[in-house]
Length: 200
Image (tube, rainbow, N blue to C red; front, side):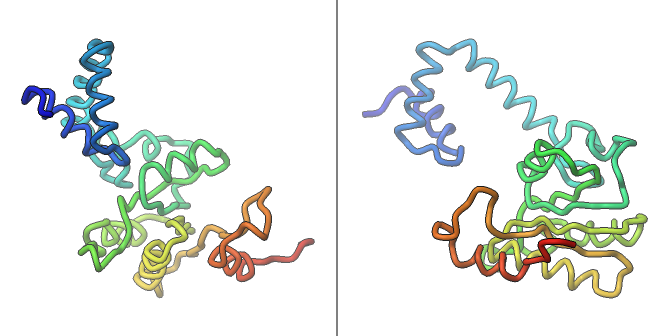
């Protein structure tokens, strides 16, 4: 059954969101039209503002509504340490966990030749240039522990071979509170490779 063109367009537009299929999009659209018109107008305004006003930080590529983001402009951050992440959500997770006081570089993806995503698409040249032009002592490769994330980390390390910078990788392994019987083989392999003395 087809609704009016405006309703159909709203439903189809909502389907662009990850995990939102036809039924969920219809439920969202009907809710906005039946009970949430004020929220819908606020959502439309916020979407319009974000789509036109949010850009990438000139220094780290994170989302920002100014040329340089708040993290990069913060004088309390340690600019000698740069954490490389795949997405803004990874950066947010690290910030919410607390403890890290360095700066970032957001790739906005990972290398994936099968999808046509190469080094230029995720800004690796910009990262290499930044390492060469700034006084960076440590580069933390915090890409995801997937095949693509690992390949991206190794590619970055290869590109910086010979550059005077310490390149580290986030530890991977068994999560706190986890049980060995429920851990996948890939994670166990990383845990064995990353083992360290109990008493240092």
